Length: 305
Image (cartoon, rainbow, N blue to C red; front, side, top):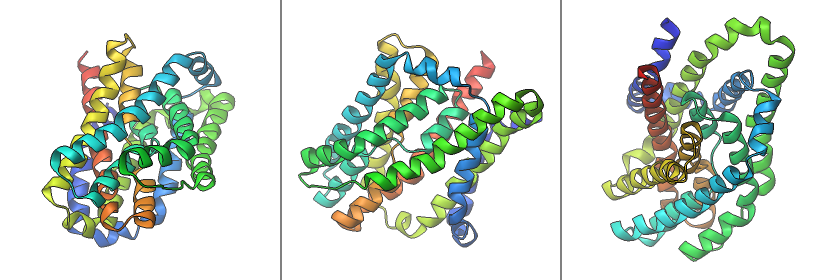
């Protein structure tokens, strides 16, 4: 009961720790090397809730995988371009926002999906596929909407997905397969461990972007918030209109609305300018907060139902 209560409050912890990290960034920024291990820990816990059958069921739903992938690369780049035009963003900021929209789903989406009680196996599958396709999709979409060529570092991205997502998840699944009955207490505690990990990760990201966040103008902040909200809303609404179940709709909403913003920042700074990296930097903070708030709301809704 205590674990469930603490877990249900994780949006509150996320906001509180974000404010604290912005006020006192030093200690949290120093924890930057802990981000990957923390994500790996959460993925390990997620793996303990999965079986090989979960992935085989996902692979038997090619239509849903295709839908999620199409929504990812159809909604976010176009939404970025339309929002940037509507708000009158300068060319460099428009390019940065388009680049965020043209990137694949981020690994944080898998964590948020787990906390939102979505379909984790589907989330991991979509993240992996969108990352594979990003090698072609991200440069083409950036060229289409921003008029610039942006090479994508395919090998480092795929190695990152393997290290942060696939290996820990497979290890957790193996532990669940061989020692599932003995791990009951550990599996019961992992939602709370996951909440603590994602809250700390958000705080670290806020601290690392402290200076950048301080220079954000209202238009950039509005653009990023609208962009993320559009992805979440259409990622949920379109599958719902097509008759998909609630877990699938939640999963697609999170996959579409949460981007690999770290990649967007790196590419923007390398191929455009530091200014073009601002939307990605803010997106990296905001999509974790909005995803946490949404997942918390869904968990409370489930409890009420």
